[in-house]
Image (cartoon, rainbow, N blue to C red):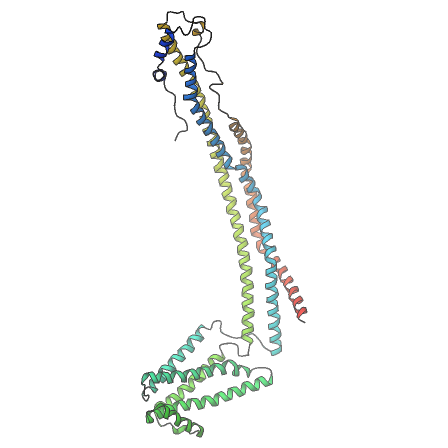
Length: 472
C-alpha cells in the first residue's frame, strides 16, 4: 500500500463545506471587514485554522510517524554489526576450539589414564601366564543360538521317546526331557567354562583341579547318558516313571552297560553323551581357553573403543562447529548485502514521502488562498463598503502553520549510508579473509588434534603413574 494519499479537498468542496458564501454575506452585512482594516478578518483566520488543524495536521502527524517508522526500520538492519561479526568470526571460532580443548582435556586425561592402566594390567597378565593374543569370537550371538537349538532339539527328542511310557503322556515326557536337558547343558556350561579352562592355568594346583573336573565330568557324562538310556528302556517295561527311576538307580552302580535291551535306549545314550560333549566344547571355545583372559582382553578393547569414539566424536564436534561458522559467515554476508538494498529502498521511500509532503504543503497553501479568494469575492459583491487595502494582497499561511517535517533522523541515516558504502566496499575482502582463516583451521585440524591427543596421552601416563604410586 502507498504511504501517501491525496487527502485535501478542492477549493469548491471546502467552500461548500465551510459555507463560505453565507459566511461572506453575513460579514458584509455587518460591515466586516472595514475599509481601514489592516488585519485579515476573523472569518479568514478561521478558514486558515480549518485548513491547518482539520485538514493538514493529520497529514503532518501521519507522515512524521511514517518517517520515524522508516528510521526505526533502518536501525534494525544493523548492517555495521553484521559486517563487524564477519571480521570477528575467525577469532571467535579459535577461542571456542581452544575452550573445548581445555574443557575436554581432564576427561580425556582420565580416559587415557584408565586405558593405559588396563593395557599395563593386561600385559602383566600375559607375561605372568605366558600368553599370546587372546582368541575368542567377536560375537556370541551364534553361540547362544546354537545352545538354544541344542536345548530345543534334545528336549523335543527326549520328550518324544519318554512320552510313550509315561502316565501323563507327552506332558510327562516333556517335563522329564526338559530336566534331563537342563542337567546336561548346565554340566557342559560349568565344565566348559571353568574346569576345562583351568587345566590350561600356569598354577599347578589350578591345573590339577581343572583335570580332576574334566575327568570327573567324563565319568559323570558316561554314567548320566547310560542312566538316561536305562530309564527309556525300563519305562517301556514298567510303564511307571517312578518305578523305572528306582530300577535305574539299582542298575547304574553295577556298571552293567548292557542292561539296556531296547534300541531307542541306546539312541538316547549316544545322543545324550554327544550333546553333552558338544555343549561342553561349545562353552569351552566361546571365550579364550585360558581362564579370565578373554574377559580382560574384552575390557581393554572396550576401553580402546571408548577412547577412539571419544576422540572421533570430539573431532567431529569441532569440525561441525567449524562448518557452522562457515555457514554463519556466508549467511551474514548475504544478510549484509540484502540489508543494504533494503536500507537504500527505505531511504528512497523516505525521500518520496518528504517530497509528497512538500507537495501537500503547496496544495494546502493553494487551498487556503482559493477559499479566501472565494470569501473576498462574495464579500465585496454584497458589501457597499470600499474594499480594504489588504484585499489586494494574496492570502498565505505562515511557515509555522504549515511546518516542515522533522528530517533530522533521515539526514543522519543518509550520512550513515556513506559509511555503510565504505564497509560494503570492504565486505568482499573481509569475507574472503575470514573464510580463508576458517579454512586454515579446518586444514590444520588433524595436525592440531594429533598434537593435542599426544599431550593428553602423556598427561594420562603421568596420572596413571601417580595413581599406581598411591596404590603401592
